[in-house]
Amino acid sequence: MVYASLATDDRPPTTDRVAEFILDIPDGIRNMTQHPGDVIVGSVVVTVTKPTKALRIKLTFLGQQRVYVRDMSNQASLLNYTNVDYTIFDKQLTLWGRDLGKDDTAANGPLETLQPGTMRVPFSIKIPRVNYPSSIKREKTCRVRYVIWATLERPGTFMDHTILTDKEEIHFEPIAYPTRPREALQINNTIYGTLETSTAHIAVVVTGGIVQLPAVAGDRVAYQLEARTQLDQRSVTNSGNQHLADINQCVIRFMRVYIVERLKARGLIKGMDHTQAYSKDIHAVTLIPTNSKPGKVSNSESVYSSNGHIRLPFDMCPFDSKQLERTYELRIECDVVDKSSLLDKMTRQKSTYTMHMPLEICTVSPDTFDAAAYQNAYTNESLNISSIALPPHHKAAAEPKVAVGGWELERSFIKWDRLNPTWVELARKRNTEYI
Image (cartoon, rainbow, N blue to C red; front, side, top):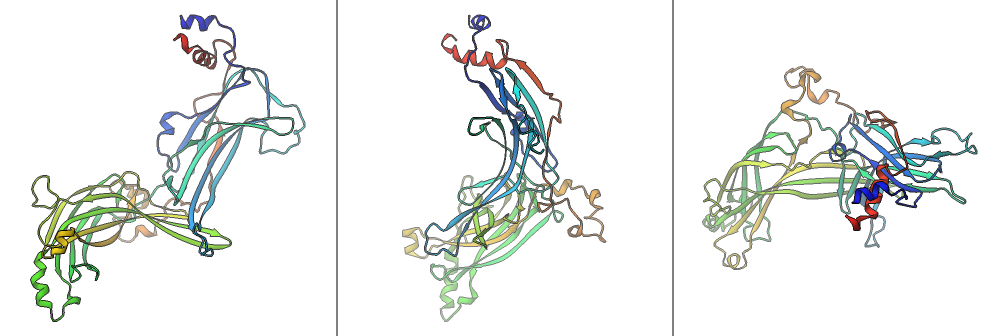
């Protein structure tokens, strides 16, 4: 009944001159991460119900980054953080109508007319092999985004009228090559206590290692760590014997590993360079003691041993765009409790011992690294991988290439009648009460 009424109804389902103006990007491209050298394809679809004079249909591909830095020259203001915007690239292309790139010799000539119907104009965007900064959004810290949209410009009496499609965000990640083969990160650190805690005379020695580094985001890295308490030799005084008697009462209750994202923003405010550093824990793992009972993660001894694997987050990609730099580090924390302290038992106080170390992340796995392409950099002792010229980084002066067509979809036109897909869709929405 519904389809029969739609098929015999010749009345237009809308009186709007522009019934549809959308940006159509295939799901396989819109929902996937793009890298240097990839191609983005899509089409702009416009449906008009009457002959419509227009200036042009324009496509814009914008790369932009914003950083928040503190204006140190304005100490009186409480809100002295300023956002600074940088344009990575701003590519525009005329898909239909008067070309923006040409002179205005024909500016007073007749305008082109969009005929009633649906016109689809395909386009393609070639991303160069340049490591633009990764897509990222951190509230009140930074933002890097890549967006595509189309604009329909129509002449007006006093000013031109513009219609914009929804902006499609493209997720981009650069290529981070490994700087060395995989190897173990050896750990042998002594962490000293602070004077404010009841365990100020105790130091924690962390030994072991983390293997399979550098790692790719999403990898499982193996670890074997041991932490033990010992007397801080710097605090040995006449009461040293008392400290030795109490050291066995200081136990390492928990041991945790954090993946920390570090951001360094640089901005120019009032002609002066400003730098702001941010850090954020993006992943945390509580290590299970080796000899613990099933389901128990706490420890009751002065030695804490653990081994296993840590799954890295998938959203990790280092880069340095001069205005914004993203790196990663490991943070190991040990919670020490003094069992001999009655106050600590009542208040459940603990002392946290912390150590930091850099974490190298790459997007090209060292296991599948094309050593032949770089002249066997890992095996030939006469060459060093650090001296090999890798593909260009963000500083290279290369911009995306935007073109009409460029893939199997061709320009098409469907006249405005009851068989037009947009006509049918709008008619269905208007007659939902019959469905």
